[in-house]
Length: 376
Figure 1 (tube, rainbow, N blue to C red):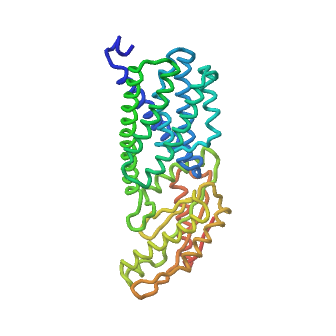
Figure 2: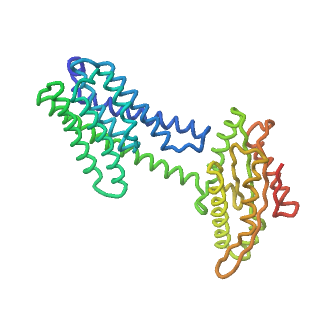
Figure 3: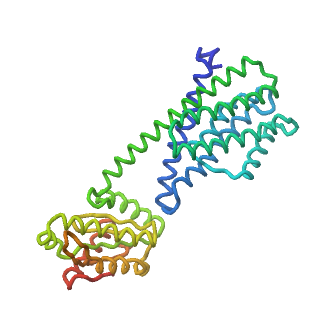
């Protein structure tokens, strides 16, 4: 149809179709990750990509095959199937246990009524071997150069084997065999270039986002990152009746440290504070996040924590910092911190109401002797 109606070669429309399918995946999985990140921050992004990738690709493969099943052209979308294998096995690096392949294969063979063909069983074993081989190529690529050459050679070898089996089963001509192999080589090359370009753009965006949301001195997340996160957490906590607590602390008499020991010493104190607090957080709960929101002021967001539950971690951070001290240029610098803690209330109309209450608790600690925690 593409040639007879629009005078466009089928390979060109196939390229746009394949790239469109994978572009839709990228857009869909990004949206899905953003939604899950709000509700279930402990779920790893790669796990989301893996499950969604497998389901997404299987839906496309099965849907396309249903339209031509049990016909003498049921091989028509085979190149898409091979590209789907490469996408899941290499670009998404999804590891599928050997036993999990068989339900997928059995459903595909049932759609095509091909249980009685020996070529189909050999084809199934070859496609599983292809998938596992691309998994190995991905792992190898993480430590070596000349990645494209190994990727392309592996894909070409299995593509020729699998297309040869299809040629035998459907009695295809050598002309069709060579044509389809040529198309496959074009598709796998374009997919590699396209995904590499997307990954490069994502890395660039990630680096820019990290720079925009990170404090250059301490590498902690900055106020911009805090503002984005508190808006999301506040809305999500309100909508789903979830707890949310915040700890705010600052370094007592920090100006005196700068004036006495110099600004480099002050910078060292800030860096050490972030390192220690992040260590305590990592040992307790990865959902908790630290932000440097001012000069010597820091905020810690504790999603799903009520005020009582904050006692599991706030005193740990408090004790770790107040017994820290640092050595700088042969001098020992002791310092203390004051802390304010509160839980989000139903009376809070927006994140600023919540922030002000925590800030008031910190102010209470500062004006009542410092080096203490005010939690209410």
